Image (cartoon, rainbow, N blue to C red; front, side, top):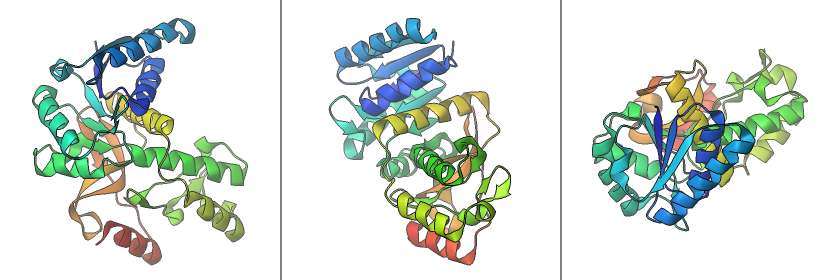
Length: 279
């Protein structure tokens, strides 16, 4: 039975748990939160929704971090009433969980967990491929939705990546496409300017979007999905930056990031990305 652990039963963690359960791709979900009763209650609520939604995922809630042992992936989300896991509390959580995770990937679902991802790599020595931030994919999904509205098409027809750093994300429009055609052939300069103006206000995504994005990345991890996702990872020379978190398109596999790709950028886009990363 495939088990996925979620550290934190707050709004983001609950959204991730519900999306994963509804996907019916995970046999067991474990919500771990210091508020054990709240975690167990949320697990029960989602489990009861299975009778309506037609999914059969087993859900449990606990305050015992050691129970994550044997999980296929772990999502680091937010505590009940306490916000995203960050800083010293987030590091203490990872110190507790890491020995039990073996080599399972860790998905950081929050919008402000870039520093925690970097600390996990530098202080805990967790391999880069196992550390994945999913918030950029939530942002990219919102951008795709806006582009689709402007182009009068389905968001599934829109292909684009997100680069840079959290809160300073850059969309390389020269790489984007709609239905197999270059985006700039479909949208006029006026339409693209309108999209860019709206995109500037999309960060940070809300808790539901963050949770669902984390769930989608976990499903992609478990199934070795062939499509790329915009993820936050510890950079290793990309754009001239090392040992700092940044966003890249990547393919995923059960052990984490299978391949990260640096898109071909225009000179203007490269300058914007390097500026965002502080390179």
